Amino acid sequence: MKKHLLTLAMALSLVFGLGTPAAAIESDRIDLIVNDTVIDVETPVQVYDQVTYVSYWPVVRALYPDASAVWQDGQAVVTAPGLTMTIQPGRDYLVANGRYLYLPQGVKLSGNLILVPTRTLSAALGANVSWDPAGRDVVITSGSGPITSGDAAYQQDVVYWLSHIINAESGNQPLAGKIAVGNVVLNRVNSGRFPNTVYEVIFQPGQFTPVSNGAIRREPNAESVAAAKLCLDGANTAGNALYFINPYTSPNSWASRNRPYVATIGAHAFFA
Image 1 (cartoon, rainbow, N blue to C red):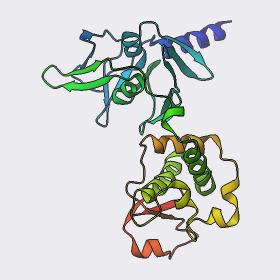
Image 2 (tube, rainbow, N blue to C red):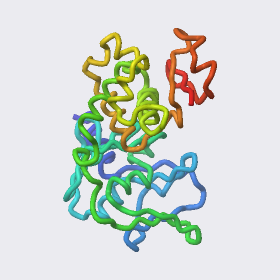
Image 3 (tube, one colour):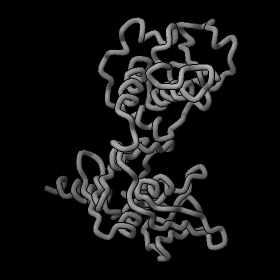
Image 4 (cartoon, rainbow, N blue to C red):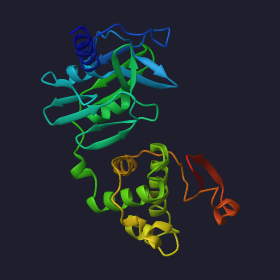
């Protein structure tokens, strides 16, 4: 019984922002102002490597008084008029109305409180955010409503083929590596040196091995689908890379000899 009650208390604290917060990273307190009202939060605004994080629930509640949150399947599930949002501690993205928004430093915990980047949370909630240096305030104001849906934002065929090539090339790689492969495809679409659609880039002759060996047809895993949507919503781990290779299987590739090196992520090296 005691263990059950402890688990329940933990779940409630993660969802609603209860519990004893850890010490703020910044010594000078940063105030959170939502629609001209200073929000009283147990954990102050915190800064991790120049990214401002806030406890999500006070912001949601201030912008959407009718919102509710429950703890379900290891994540906070938030509902409000026009909004469904899930936030999972430790995950590198949040999902709002089917939109996948990248968090390079992940969802964080301070004590039992869930913290997310202010700008990403504001984007999900359809709010505007600014910094007032004079008062050291993070200022959030209501916008026109929550983020538009994934159904409206993503083209189904683009998600289909982008997730398939990501899975075929990097299905066993970390999320950052999956995103990087998607970045290469989208960078090619935006480059005058390659075709101008995702499908044409993927099926351009001689470019991607999974097309020739049939692996492109395999059903993508869930994280590959998430990576495709993250890319389409702006996530980028590969910069302006146009090529990638496995340096262990292709140590003397054309790209490694002729193109500027960008990064190595997982099993792949990326080149511009």
